[in-house]
Image (cartoon, rainbow, N blue to C red; front, side, top):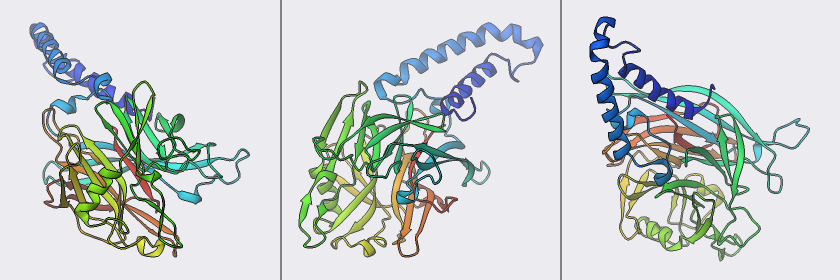
Length: 384
């Protein structure tokens, strides 16, 4: 079916299989019969190797790999982006109240001659749902592949949606803020997969009383961990967030806002790209120019955190999502596809910028490109 990323992945495997059997190109007809048995034997051994070497979907929570995962680095990488339109996402004129988001498809393309990366923009699809909290919903803030499904998280309702065929959403789970014993949905801003479990986190900042600066609660310092059987555990990440803030000198009353945290299975490290970084107390207007250009690389227990400048600091732009660029099997992650977004409340504008960044701080692999539509895209994921 058109638009199904899982079917596109399957097509890659089937096409490669046909070519290996001489059904597309390959040996001329008169040579096929002589080599058929040998090729089938080699193909069988190769598939056994794949099965033995590649972790299963059940073990990792990741979809089955394409042949890209065991060959040369890809020159085309399909990605999807999802938008958080905030309060401007009510569907006007609908009989039943509906809220919307936008899913933007794109392909990262590497020029084999120059080695330069570029982007080809694909179709844009409106996603709709009637689910809301106090008249707001579908403020989708992240995309992540888990257990063979593409998921999107809503930072208003706490709903985790399954994105079906890249064209509609179905609720799977709902997460509540803090320790879970509340009636308010978690303000989920990032999601990642670690050891087969889905981690969905809030933005890592205390809720502060604007009048006197006192801390009202720390519910946004918690993370929900979902197991493949659907069970959920709420973890207090205050000490982990504080470890990140110690490196950036942003302890309270300073702050960081996190919207791009991912676990790298190949590195066995946490990769954190802050949205906002400030040594000063929070201020609505000033916050718009407290963007970030840094990557924080943390050990599994956050006992060791290193800071790397991975791009140019533009105060209005802060990271809103990131995903690992595909690598050959056995290699470790060396680059991320990243989103930085910018907002101007006075002008009523929102914009997002897409780039590919090296983890070692050697500079952008692909410089920032503005995403079409003048929207705030807060989720990006590799889908093929």
